[in-house]
Length: 398
Image (cartoon, rainbow, N blue to C red; front, top):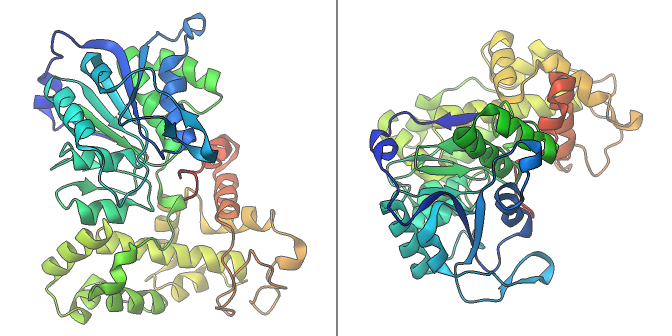
């Protein structure tokens, strides 16, 4: 799923300054950035694939600070250009930032601001969104980042409209993506925007990836809340909600427990988590249903009741929207991939619990591996969705 903004007439109307060229792409690297994310724009825009029908870009790799730049595995990189290279680019990509808690170098932020003022398209992949936000380029705009870091982005930069569900967001002259594989999605989208579907499809075939992925980050979401919530008054309300998902309650109930009006509660919750409280609550109920389908023999109707849904129809609708399959199809696909001795027993509890399983009847058990859930969801969606769901939307170490 992607978000393409049509509400940015000024962005669409702005033109590149005379010294900038549309075909030049500058990639801004920093020390400590993960090598996978850094390599994505280098591969997409830096390799000549004209023989495959892919128009050629001119790539400039620029260091955002003094080198050498250290990356994954202790490797050291030396960029051929410095910040001056950004002055020639029509597109500037920030593939990742080393730490969501530390500020980027002011010189790099100034260079990004100047590039944007002169009409360049600015792109942030994964945690690169934090650099764009620090430069003020996301103020008042929709944006996304890796789902794990979306709450922190929303809290640190409250003027940014963070949507953790999207794989990427195109707001005209400023674009952001979720983690790792979503960076490929956004780079393909840029090629598609510049040169059409045929060129993007040819590049996707060369990279052996889907030309377009359906869905968003919902299938990867877990109980993702910022660490800072522990010191916030809303922490108690959130903890209560997670412990009572089997009950039927709504956002008004949560607001009352927080002694806030619904409007104030919505605003505080969104600023803290980056998500609207209703969407967060639905996501937690779907996750709980996912766990029960994996670890029990409850019927779908019983699962709906145990997860606080008012009806099985409501569960099926939200489950399909978030995971792309029906609850029954998800359970069948999941069980087909679990060892026989880890499948639910006839009494509704799981069989022998290994390190990668969980049961609502055994709260101290560890979580089911997230990749198993992704594979099950992909299988339930059908063979055409297998590849797209097998590309995790998260960065290394996330």
